[in-house]
Length: 227
Image 1 (spheres, one colour):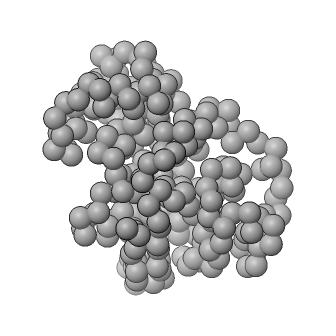
Image 2 (tube, one colour):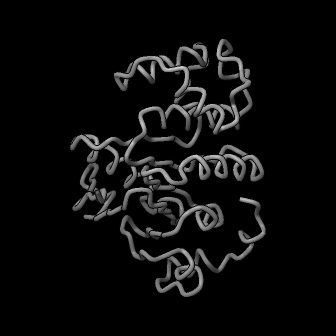
């Protein structure tokens, strides 16, 4: 079933943060939401998550930094238990092992605090928590901006392999066109709090139509990055 949310909008103190916007994603589809800083990408992501959750759609959100999801004073095991309880799920060692193996954190010590894990491992752990409940949609907001390009590429590669042949749709929010182009089949471009272009990734990269898309595609140095 298509995940659809129409007429999404946001205002604050009389200022429009998001003009009325429609979002549609097919099961298992990988979509990138790109645009310059301040274009409204994160606002759209938050409004979409809140709207779909209010309708009962299973949506998971991965923030920009693991610091936003992990308490430095709590063990990793505590965070995992909290995530399971929040979803109303019983502890399941097989489910945890499947996710940890897929994201290559199986050998990590859950008794430790987040700061004793590398940043890349922390973010893969947060992604694993987001996938516990097999959500219909995974929204990732600049999920690799705190990682170096090699670690970012590895993390996205592991996620790509895990989601393959699954029905969880992915919305990747990023200002990094290179990252999005590598991992999604469709791109939506935002400018001034609106989606101004929506096209299959190869077509948008080869023949962008709007000024915003052309500006993003003009910086071809992203082709050289591993992610």
